[in-house]
Length: 122
Image 1: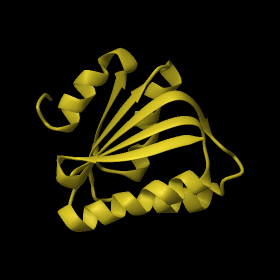
Image 2: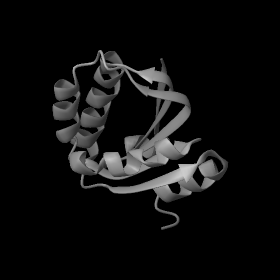
Image 3: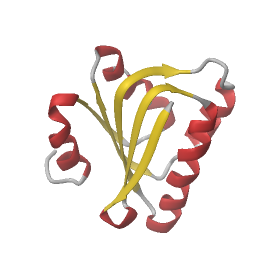
Image 4: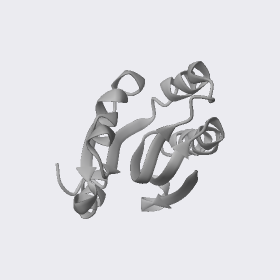
C-alpha cells in the first residue's frame, strides 16, 4: 500500500493519496491525523485521491475500522478522486460513516476536486 498525507489551507484540508490495497495500519495512520486536525479546527475537509487503488484488505478487522470511521464527525467535506466506476461508489459507501458533503471526481477532473474541497466551486 502506498499512502501519503498532505495538509493544506493551514491544516483545514487533508489530502490523502492512496494506492494499492488499504490495510488496518493505513487507517491507523490517517484516522488520528483527521481527529487531530478536527480538534484543532473544529471541522476538516478530506480529499482522498485514489490511484491504482485496489480496495481494502479483508484481513483488517472491519468492525474496528467501521468504529474508527464513525468517530470522524469532524469531516465537513469529503472529496474522492478515482479512476474507476467502483471508486465512484465509495462516496455512497461513506454515507453511514459521516454527515459530510461528499463528491466523486474522475481523475481527469482532479483540478476541480481541489477547487471543490476548498469551497471555490459547489
